[in-house]
Length: 300
Image 1 (tube, helix red, strand yellow):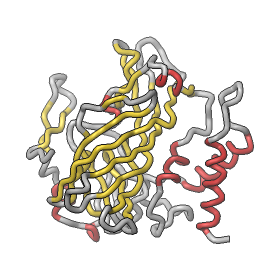
Image 2 (cartoon, rainbow, N blue to C red):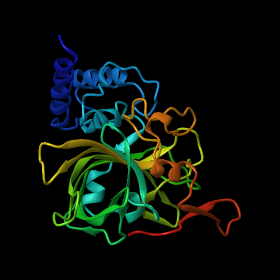
Image 3 (cartoon, helix red, strand yellow):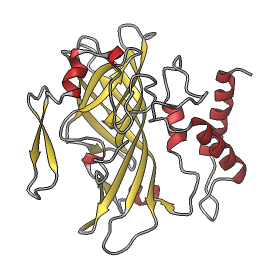
Image 4 (cartoon, rainbow, N blue to C red):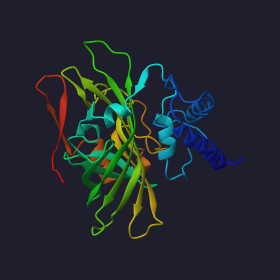
């Protein structure tokens, strides 16, 4: 059986898993949980450049379904489903769950060209789990405006908690972003995203991005994995991922151990600007410990 056939079977199993209702304990049916665990084990760490999983195939452009499998929990003993809390309005998402104050960094195409993605802060909730968003993308000097939506598929909260700490949340969502068709080089971006978030003691109903581990090796957050499809040539589909720090499914592009490092084979002026932080100014915050990033020449 070919690798592609095995992937299709695994994904079909995962699709079935997604349609099951939770039982009394909140766990999926044992049979499908077993399949999910096997698939996740076979995938390994999709953020690690040394991953040699047979499920990771460079010819596979869209890895969003594999990313969703990677993100889906297999142990429900320490988490609880918060979909209803979000849809009922008991908790709400801060816009920073999807956006930072500077553009996110990412890759586009098999040559891993640098793409920057910026979301404006005026996110609008249009139904219980869907948010309208807008922003801009930049590849080299080409800038496109986009509008679209992000729909929450799952939100989980960690059960372990004490009065002096925050609750932790894990978010899985799908996105569809449509660039302005009148602009050069425009297209459509779609896929799956993840975000690790938390609530603070003084605002327990507001879920915001958790950057407490931002200085740690291997850190990733607000990770978007999917594709970009050209309007002019719908047959032209490119891999497209962006997020905070480390990115998944990058094969030999990222050769770093502790943090992302661009393989010299993919060197470009744009990646040079990122590697040496030529566009970013780090400003010490008021607490005297953390730094805030400021973009030198905003293009959005």
